[in-house]
Image (tube, rainbow, N blue to C red; front, side):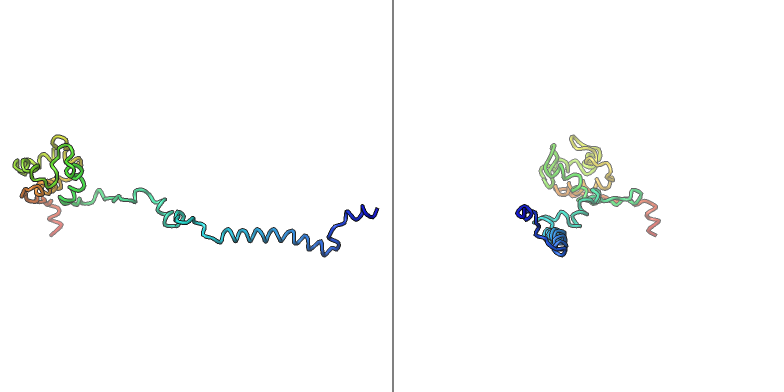
Amino acid sequence: MSDAHDQHESPIKTPGQLIAAVVAALLVPIIIIVLLIKFVSSGDTVGAGSNAQTPESIVARISPVANEGYTFKDASGPKVLQSGEAVYKMVCAACHDSGAAGAPKFADAAAWSPRIAQGYDKVLTHAMTGLNAMPAKGGNPDLDDVEVARAVVHLANAGGAKFKEPEVKVAAAEVEAAK
């Protein structure tokens, strides 16, 4: 009977050994978990070459689309007239740089000479009302007549004309405000 009784013996023989075993059973897994967390979180969490989680990248992603490339203008404010070159680059260059739909190319004297021969007023009328595939005011109805005239002078002068820059008629209210 002594052999059967020995089989059920435990390595823990005293209450001190029991307390040590319970404490070790609780502390060892906790220490292992803490060390694993330290190991995992000690490195750089952002992947190599990625800056997707930087504050600047996050701000860029959530910024409104309207903040990029759009300038809001006060509709009630005074209109600032653009130069002929600015109007050309914004509106006219789309067709006159490539010669699309028969448009005379910029600075092409041969293409512009028959138009220049018709005179400034006729060329300006065609630009204002449209001609063939060209829409009125180049397709931008928001352009002021003076802006279109400046663009015509810019285009025609590049093609060999000697047109004068149009004068801007100053409103009476602006003259009074200047005094």
